[in-house]
Image (spheres, rainbow, N blue to C red):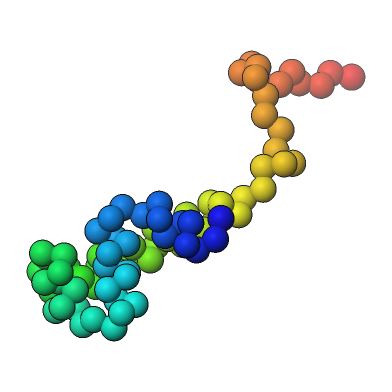
Length: 80
């Protein structure tokens, strides 16, 4: 998944905060647009960036080599 795809999966307030930051708005202006306290903008942006990074990282995991078992019983010990 590319960054645009991951961006669209973000909850709306986080996507909006990142968009406003990208447009060069100050934290005070972002706070006013989002209807939050100016002190909350920094943590909101940090969380938004972390969520975006998590989405991008999760999308790069290759499961083609993963072995999935339907059987939930533990493997038998090997006795020789």
